[in-house]
Image (spheres, rainbow, N blue to C red):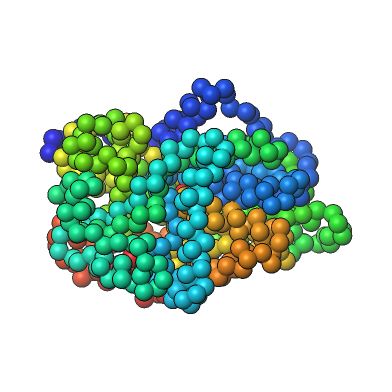
Length: 492
Ligand SMILES: Cc1cc2nc3c(=O)[nH]c(=O)nc-3n(C[C@H](O)[C@H](O)[C@H](O)COP(=O)(O)OP(=O)(O)OC[C@H]3O[C@@H](n4cnc5c(N)ncnc54)[C@H](O)[C@@H]3O)c2cc1C
């Protein structure tokens, strides 16, 4: 392995590579329609807070089911400026969490939820075709490659369990030869293949959604941070709703929206939102992208566009791009304090160094390859590492967050469910088992922050030991098990 150059890209100094690529393509295709900040007062049937996938899919499906609904969407940055425009682009549903869904909701309702989530992959692909959005959609499957030399993968059993629970063929155990045929690395052993998964250029999907919404007449205000939301059910409210008048008020830096209903689609930022802050923890995930290396990919045999990951808890996930790069990420960033989403999630150079170290471990033959960019973002982890979707304030406010690093696909299902909750709470989508279900709350600050930092470090050390073929030390093993003992779903 050639020696890695000392200098690595500095995260957080410019927008992520995906978003720069998408914005360039957008301006070459005729420019970006502006979406000016909100100033003054306006009214809407529905106000949506957050211009990521969840908020934009909600607006899209609402405009489908109830044309003519006046929708105002507020985004503090630009649409897709958050994780939706800088994630790994792994699109899949919930087959890997089917055992959790069945355990929590029973065999029929658990399977029904996973089947509903299965729609997202072809749904996104077909949507892109229908709306002329070139988001580099490619359905080539997702291969989890076991990287630990000594610990067994358990993949055969996982595949059998998925079959037994009613989803044969959705997760398939592969032997090491089949894994090597996809990408020849000495670090990979056996594998678990999910054929239904697809890759996308994440920012192109986000920006495509924005274009379609503007064309449909959705009013978007970018550069518009929401400071506060009030409904007649908010604590300390001393005004009564006037029948027929909008009963939700949303204050931004420069204006106010009065609406009949609101949708909270702020992802990790919900960790700082009243009423939700005990429900999730934000954790950093970081990515790097290489220079174009199509010949090196061909030498690895990795030309089929498959998504890859390893089996670390602080997962390394990697995929190729249309122009022959590798985009490689890992959940090795830190947890932040008290729901503040700041530099911890975007400017952590130590996390980037850890991502690169994982890259070198998994793809040692590429040690001389240059990295052209690095970036990070917050992922929103709940007690069960599963999204919370539901309604509050007497059905006037609807929310979805907590995708726990797997929202690129499921945010579409969340958008369909949120649109149903707004339009018709009796719709079958609004009655899926997970809708309204709450998970174990997290410890209060500062215990959450301290605990998360200690446990994260233990998990990384445990993964490093297993990667090196060692048994993790007693202290590391014990600390990594604490969340499970406390009733959180924090293990694979
Ligand atoms: C580095 C990284 C890699 C990832 N890789 C994958 C992957 O490969 N596959 C996968 O499935 N998932 C992945 N994820 C997770 C995925 O990106 C998210 O689950 C998904 O984007 C969630 O979409 P969202 O719309 O709910 O949230 P976001 O995209 O975070 O959108 C929320 C929006 O709300 C806005 N907002 C917040 N507060 C306010 C406010 N007060 N006022 C106005 N606007 C506000 C934010 O600016 C943001 O744009 C990754 C995440 C990261 C960070």
